[in-house]
Length: 137
Image (cartoon, rainbow, N blue to C red; front, side, top):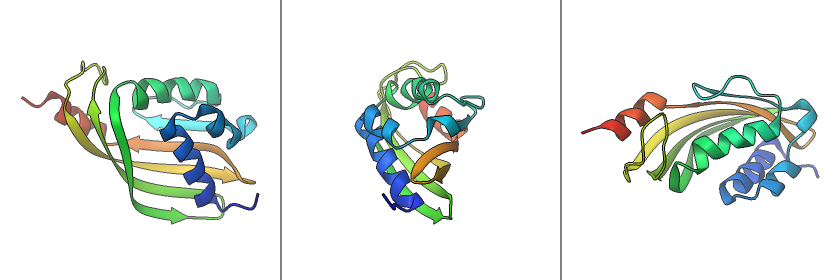
């Protein structure tokens, strides 16, 4: 498959959003995996461990999660995406119990791709803005 880094990222991200973990796993290079979600995890080199963090932070606390790309920069072996996430808060996140609030926050991802496989990512969510929405009175 001669997919571009952007095509590879989007296929991988679509699998994650759909809950298709097997599909997402087929699109990664586990031997090269390196990931950090700033403020939520340290550096992770095991994709299965990264998936448990993804489930804890991006699946369980949210319902109706949507990601909207706002800016994309594609390089030879990486893609940088600035996006907005919208979701309803239905489970504990950042120590805040479910509020039922619909929130919207921004995030940035730098996703590394090599030979048609995702090899890792560095992600930063607007955790402060999100926390403010969850705890507003």
